[in-house]
Length: 178
Image 1 (cartoon, helix red, strand yellow):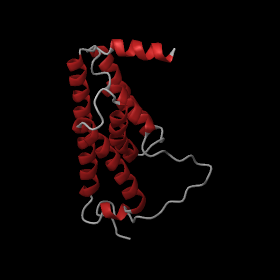
Image 2: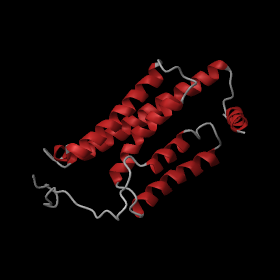
Image 3: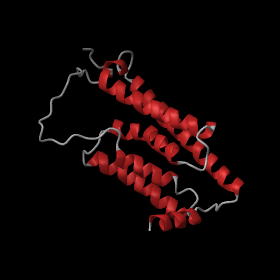
Image 4: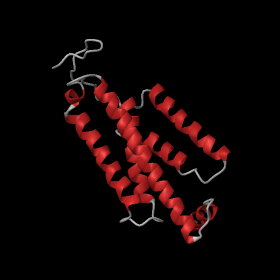
């Protein structure tokens, strides 16, 4: 095992008793909060602000109660992009604006899961900055892909003449659900 540069801690496995609940990876709390916030773009400023507050409350709530580790919230970002790309039916699947976020988000999510399960020492091989650079890069890519797919969806809706505010779509979904 290699000693960390900051703090001199040695990487080792931690065994938890079975009665302690384990956290989920990625955090679905965070993923759903992000999806709510990103899909509130067509609505009023009050709704968007409430959604942003919900995201921050989710971050502080999940970290503060110990339900999730920080990295669980980070991996939720590319996972949310994957879910958004799968659920966006107004843009064709073969479109670059939907396919790239779908494949990129899924690949990044799986890459995080594999690296965190089998290659923790990889992150500290050179410098402790490597994990932070990976966190920054993955959240930036996820934000870029989410912006790409949401702008493509908005362009597609405007091009077909459907409602810009999304109210008609919500009414149709509620009617179909009833």
